[in-house]
Length: 72
Image (cartoon, rainbow, N blue to C red; front, side):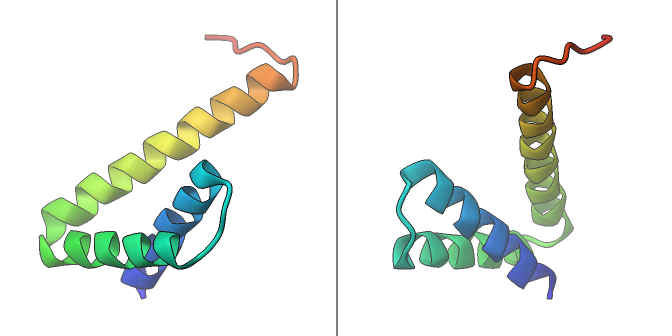
């Protein structure tokens, strides 16, 4: 189940970057998720860290675009 979630998130990210949906994003997401789960706990930690950083960056960018400033 975790592999499906990771694959979906990576596929979505590829689609947003390219602006086109399709088989390529889904295939890359599937391969990246499989590689992360095959490498064991280290791969899952690295993949989770990458996704957390992307979410943090997007949150920070949305605050800047909305005209809000950060306190820090």
